[in-house]
Length: 130
Image (tube, rainbow, N blue to C red; front, side, top):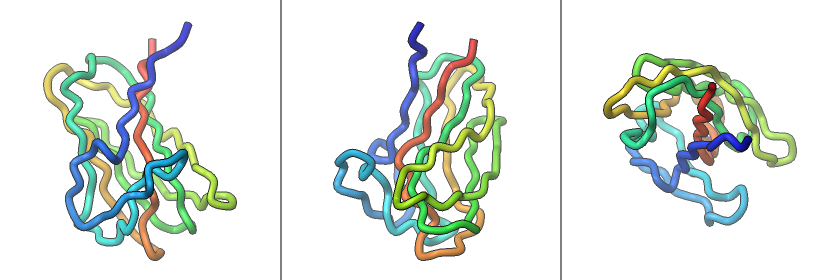
């Protein structure tokens, strides 16, 4: 059976800060120029059913050493950025979120930025677990 993947694209995010976007083509639908620790992205999850979800980030990064935090309600996870192999998209599973009923926000915040930009985030995926 196919499991529905809830995809939260950066194009649909509320951008808190001065960031740009890629051209929107395949693997280029990312945020660019994410430099400052005060800048973050958020999405409203009001349409999501309560339950357990696998949390996955998809991004492109030029180097290691930066880190970020994903927060959904009581789920908070800090994760190190992994450098892309030849500009390929990194798919990183970062944990399981137990999402409560009612309005929730999903936020992605920089913790440490070691390069020209934190990462070029494409999307966050929330995959329901049985």
